[in-house]
Structure formats: C-alpha cells, structure tokens
Length: 310
Image (cartoon, rainbow, N blue to C red; front, top):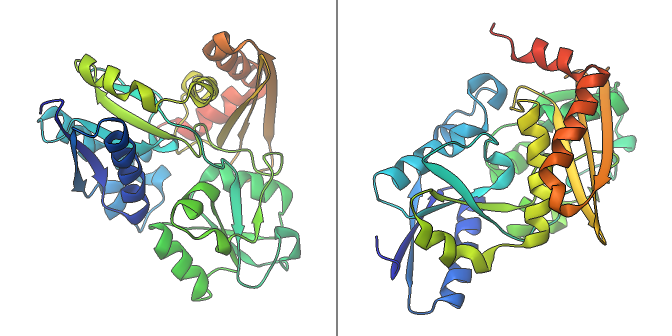
C-alpha cells in the first residue's frame, strides 16, 4: 500500500465501524489527498457468543484477523478499542497511536430502575467483564450477575426482552452510537474502576512502517497516551487478561499523574486496591509500582489461582 492509499482493518460490528470511520474521517481531514478505505473483517471474538471471553482466549480474539490483514498487506493499520488490545503486544506489531479518550466510566442501563441500589434482591444484572462483576458482587452481594455477550445492539436487545433487570456497559460505546439516552446512570470511578485503556481508541501498525508512524502522529493525544501507558503498565506487570478481575485508571492533575488500580477475586469477596501519583514522564514506572503494591498486599495469590492451567 502507498501512503496515498491507506486501508484500515476493522471488525464489522456497528461500534467497531464507528471507530474505524472516526479515524478514517480524521485522516481524510488532515490528508485530503490520501484515499482511506475500510477492510471489514469478522473475528473469533465476534463469532463465539455462547461463552465468556475468559473461557475462550481473551480479548486478543478481537484483533487476530486484523493483524493477519496487516501481515499480508491487505491493510495498513487497524483500529481497536484500547481496552481490547493485549498489553503484551509483540513484534512485528506495535501500538503506534492512542487517540483522545471519551468517557471512561461504566454505564448502568435499565428500563425499570434508576440505580443499582434500586434493584431488588435476586435481580439479574448482565455484564461482559470479570472486572465489573467482581466490583458489583462486592457492593451488591444480593444481586445475581450473569454473563452478557454479543455486540451492543444484541446486549440491549436482551435487556429489552426482559432477560436482565439491568446491564452494565461502557459509556463511550453508547455515546458513539448515539445511545446516550439509554444510560440511566454513569457510575463513578470509585464505584466501578474502569479497565486499562477504557474509552480510548488505539491504532496498530507493523513496526516496520515508520512512514505510518509519522503520518498518524497528529491523531495522538499526549494526555490520553500518558494515562493509558500507566494503566497498561499495571496490567502488563500483573499479567492481566480476561481471566483476572483487574482495573486501572489514571488521571492527570496539573503536573501530576494519579493512578488507581485493583485486583479482585471474581466473587468480589477480596479486593486489593492501590494508588500512587508521580510525574507524567514516569508513567510506566508508576504503573509497575502500583502493581507491586497490589502484589505485596496479596494480589499475586489471586492471579496465580485464576491463571493456573485447568
């Protein structure tokens, strides 16, 4: 592919297409002479809907087919939700660009209730992540938490059919698809600490494509890049995967970077929390230090029990 003709690999779901089209529009705006096309692909993560991500291989299932397209030259770049991108990305791939973050908070969505505290004991709440599940179980042990898979429209459809009293989704995804009106409550980060990278978009390229690295640079958000670097460092240090209820969230406060993280058991009965602040230039080191705090508290035992071969 030439730099005058770019192809973006993307999943075919409505949200993934919005994300790719957003990058496509930004590139066309910055480089009006460049033709930017989309390559729509189906991934195993989209196709396997009867099992939780933690049981079928994790979020990497959403990017493998896109990476094959980069390798064989069908595409130049791939656009991902950053929280779906494995933190241990290896050669020949690289995460070249992190765009400005949208709302990182989790959203409480229900047709009948205004808040989690309004749900009666035994009410069924749907969520797609162990991170959310553990935090929900810790705060509301009387609720019943069930796995919720499928794209955004599928999940909302299950709620509307009465299969769940409420579901927890990412605010950013609902906003991007014009579904903000479905949000009954945006949960605070204290109530539901986000996943590393939540709300941000990442662009993946081949390490050999230095031309693309330069071309994509104007799309990068320095603040979001710093924050997500710290968050993903926590996850990397802890071997984070879909099997582990792990959250990490960083915020810039002037010249200080504040980072909070947690590791929990899936039942929410044990949650270890840690937080530190430091210079933005030390974002990755800050992430590793927070991870070490969690390990010192006992998070290592949780990680070992959840990731050991069955």
